[in-house]
Length: 310
Image 1 (cartoon, rainbow, N blue to C red):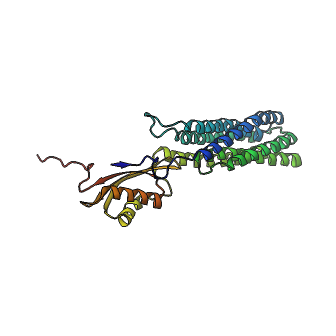
Image 2 (image 1 turned 90 degrees about the vertical axis):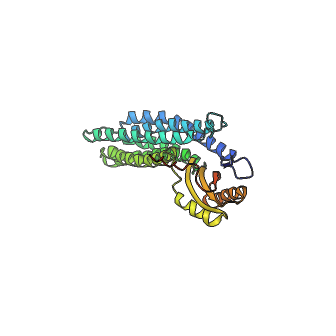
């Protein structure tokens, strides 16, 4: 069996240090400004009697926790691998993204519950306070959004944080719109109705993050890669390969993909050359930089032994 650790001549699957540091720095700033404004928005929501503002403040509270966790995930993933965690700590980012997605479900459920209760009553809402706080919140959320836009948007941890911030941004827009309608018409049901719209968007975004991170945690193959094509491609393009089986592809994070496979080669074939050619083809055609290849001549060593005859 031949293995490539990613430290030799081949390309390394590790994320470059500079983009990783950029992600961490931007996540930290986004968490800081979100946490600072959260208190102002909660106070404004209480003063205005606005569910839209309170819902957005509650979302910002979870955003602050989520962004802080995401920042911690980047910090933790810098730790080197050890004998207990041979792949290192990179997947902690995916675990945080999964938890953040679940948190979005809880936020959406709370907003729906509060909105339904508000629709059954006639709340007193101050449109003027709503508009002022919503404008400030919108500016803060836009700043946080652009901070994260400059990070690696393919990183699932960043994507999860972006969904949280985008939900906050939409919440601020909804609160601003509701405040304007109340100021112009006095129609207060617009406040919980727009909150329901924001809740639907939050839940939809949360599902996307949970599905993507859960797929990685379940060792699923990358969505854009058809594992059924690997065997035929290697047989067609790597001289000496007669069969490929036991193909397993999974991800540590989106940028760290792993593959293991068995390759059946002809007797007398140069095994070292075949392994190098297989790894080169996997990297070139399927962007799989970390490959473990077991070479076989004849029967597979993992084949089920025949049952002894009675």
